[in-house]
Image 1 (cartoon, rainbow, N blue to C red):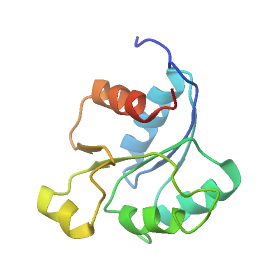
Image 2 (cartoon, one colour):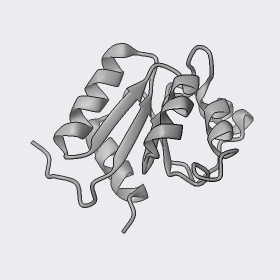
Image 3 (cartoon, rainbow, N blue to C red):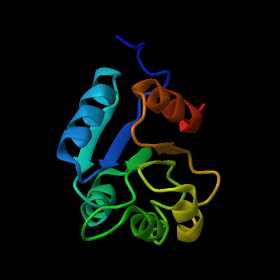
Length: 127
């Protein structure tokens, strides 16, 4: 079992793959974080407006609203702009560049190791 989080966070996950979404939520919950999840970007934006997350973990390719559109929408709300984001994706480097994903957003390419999730969460966690 991994060590507990240095800083507890409220984390929202947007991932259309139900199994991966459940695995991420369970893993991060076991580390002591409060985790809620959504099946697409539109659901996550609605959730973020009420939950005020400390971190968003998102896929990019999802139905209804893709991750890049969701990131742009979050930035439109003053209370949500600037929330740390981690991207988990199967997108190529060229696709990420074409989407205009800021370089400061950590990107984990699928498939990934859960230790990399812990490292990325620690990277963006408030100190």
